Image (cartoon, rainbow, N blue to C red; front, side, top):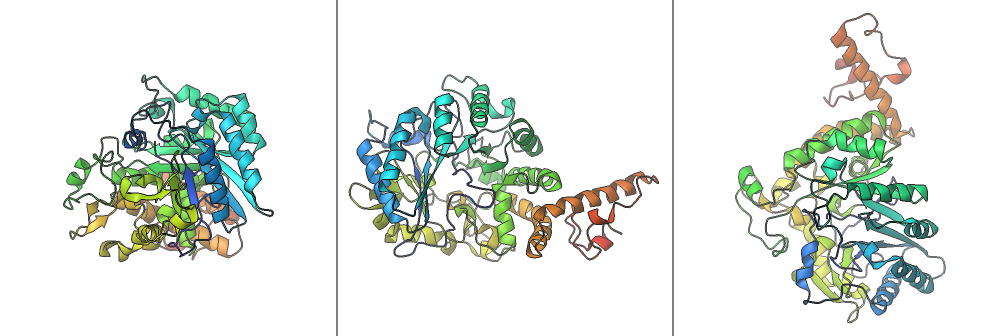
Amino acid sequence: MAKETPQRSGAAAVQPAMYGVPSDPSAFHTLAKPIGPICNLDCTYCFYLHKENFFPKGENFRMSEATLEAFTKQYIEAQDVPEINFAWQGGEPTLLGVEFFRKAVELQKRYAPEGKTITNALQTNGVLLDDEWCAFLKENDVLVGLSIDGPKDVHDKYRYYKDKRSSHDDVMRGLRLLQKHGVRVNSLTCVNRATGSRGREVYRFLRDECNFEHMQFIPIVEKIDFETVAPGTENPGGPDPDDDLLKVTPWTVKPEQFGRFMCAVFDEWARADVGKVFVQTFEQTLAGVLGMPASLCVFSKRCGRALAIEHDGGLFSCDHFVYGDYKLGNIHDKTMRQMAASEQQKKFGNDKFDTLPRYCRTCEFLELCYGECPKNRFIQTPDGEDGLNYLCAGYKIYFAHATPVLAMMAREIREGRPAAGIMRAIQAAEQVEASKASGSATATAAPKPNAKPRPNDQCPCGSGKKFKKCHGA
């Protein structure tokens, strides 16, 4: 499945801001895959299950205690920051059993220097969770990211057991157990071609039925040859949208479809949930509007400080680049700090910006996007330059739609007021619109003064006009 690290809070993702790789990085993030690609589900769109083919037949995909200890010690030693986060993924990490993670926490305590805080995040499909697991997660304050794509028919389209049985009911059971034990839990939802037209429905399910307060929406983008060809080594085709769709799997979300999905979610969120529900992409875009650096690698100017470690100690440039071309080495031969500061990794991180086509560099949304993830840059620009992101058209739809409202939120924040005030402005504009449509005396009554934007404010409808010359006219 698609992987991201669970959000630590409503204000930032787990990953540090990534602006290139210094000669001796003071901190870097590592996604640990202690069971490699092994999973109890068989999700159609999983980008990692095929990694099993990269290892010898009969490979034991369980991280040994020696490798776990070496990873723990080296990772802690390499982090010159007050808080050190361990992120566990897979495959499905709960297949290792709770005792593996008890040992992991024990080793963290053994090697943690005085004055440093150690935290843990676990990404899971949730189907193996029970009371013992949840008690452990609560006791150790582990932040859990739960993979769930929406209502049952949406979720089960691509997320099922190896015998094709539905997984939705078991995921929901796991969620209720996490909530019963008071475990902090975020949702990770994959946006694919089947769900791309159901943004509002998916968001409402996550909010109302699942009670998530922190959400991540991950676009599924996979080239048809992703199991054998590493990103960045393919030959782009021509700048023809129809040709672009022939390059990707049938479950890959269409670019414009993804943009509309995010717009639908944004409208629902901005109208009623600002300050109550935290959506990772919206937070990253708001940070960009405020002139702040992105904390998530895909939207940062440069990357290279979010690595991945496999069960055998192999270290890779990124978890989306676990291919031979991007292997940095093994922790049993070199230290993690050495590999993270290697010329190979520095080039990988700097290439995120350095290889952007001119079309991107002159884009009005450059500083909100910076070309998104390099793994998705396999199409050509309208003028035929290589390296355009497959999702470009979708992100432009979303950015154009969301930034006028986010700019108003940014102004509220700069003036020391909560961003949630934007909801009153949106609701006021809706009341004005409704009054114009109905023409009734009751409906045309002006909304309360404290609910309306000021006359010279930008109209929250996104027109770019002042409120007094648009919906406030």
